[in-house]
Length: 261
Image (cartoon, rainbow, N blue to C red; front, side):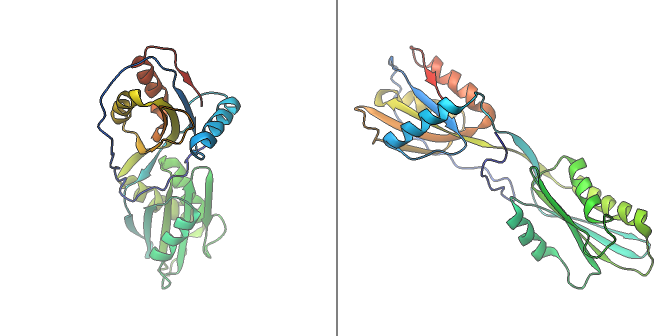
């Protein structure tokens, strides 16, 4: 399943708050239906139909992924043959946020404001008046080499009167971009998978206990399932915890469980 799953990357990789109901843990023998998808559709009976469709069309596996991005805006400055190069890198989530970042950091007084960004498989670069391929492309190459994603690097140049030549420009733009990213504090972002569970009231305590253990987020509860004594719980969990969460729920119930993804 492609990444990111509709997530916006915060500047500081903020942690989320988790809220759980305190319910008594009572174990009974029930069948629980669970589905996982990148987006959760509807509620009640409509949601059950959506989950069944998701289950039948899925080829299995929890999907999702993780990526490394930078925590905050960082800069690196270097003078090369009297030209001043200032690289500014910042975390972004999509093309719109990339151009918003560019508008904030570019200097209209500078000779060139060259840039590149990468969001998953999507990327763009711009030479801003430098010879083609001598600025934006080496900045992008520096981003790829760093292993950092969801990031934009803008390199501002103030011309000092000495031409660098194509090779010199490639080394200058790529070099300052690499140094900027090398100095940046990073964090690992794991994508979240939304899951839905139809569960008897008696098992809510056991279920919430497991959701808390696996740091589930965005938990909602819907009683309009059309079934007596049954409620639907939806939540998000890190993509690499889906199977572990399923096993934990199985181990807290005495009958075979059916999971849909």
